[in-house]
Image (tube, rainbow, N blue to C red; front, side):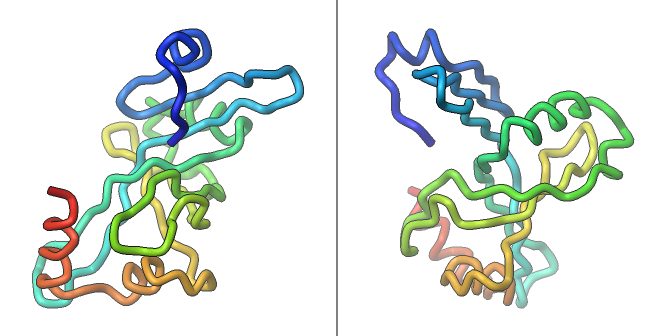
Length: 144
């Protein structure tokens, strides 16, 4: 995400637990828009999948559409949107800007992210292939 001094943050940022918009500093910049999402990863030796909670940056137009449909039960019919990961994930080469697809999943669930298969990024490769329960434990250790 973006780091701003507290006074500037109060003027330029609108946020809640799920959505964040950073208004531009100058008139020629576009707002930066972020959505809190989940990325599901299959765990081969478990009946449960692992879930990453990540922020994704979307275009201002897509952000407006997400806000408009946020409480709409029919939002699952919305076309997938291009986005990029807005978090650095420890243990991987930089994941900021890693391309993903965002799908709205319903008004009671956070949007879902899908990594794009053609990136070749190690995080994307692991997420697409699935991981072992041991690998999930390694992820959790890094987050402590």
